[in-house]
Length: 144
Image (cartoon, rainbow, N blue to C red):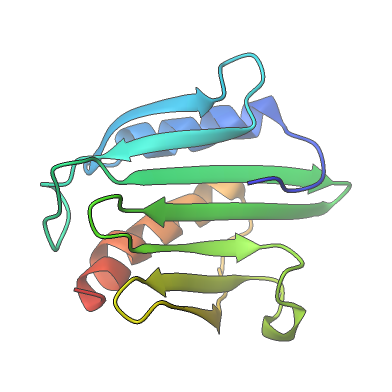
């Protein structure tokens, strides 16, 4: 993590609420704590995702920053059982892909792949809802 810009506490409260409502998520908290709030971390029940993984809980980290009207974010999933991780990033790391990209690292190949991505919505909570839907319905099952 480590995006530049400022944190909006009300946005983080909304992101935490979205994560708490997702059926695969078992717990949500601010990291490193509720005072500093650098990012929001959710624990995912390994038995509630397809394919089932375990025994350790995968993590979903969400970081959001603002610089004036511009926003940067990272929505990143990591499974400690398999080493697989993926996520949507809106940052300056891959300008050739546009403002948002999806990246994934598959431990079997050892490679990280980056793809252009888009979101129709612009509010952080709506982007997160869409990303969670894509993650659990499309992306994780396709990487099994």
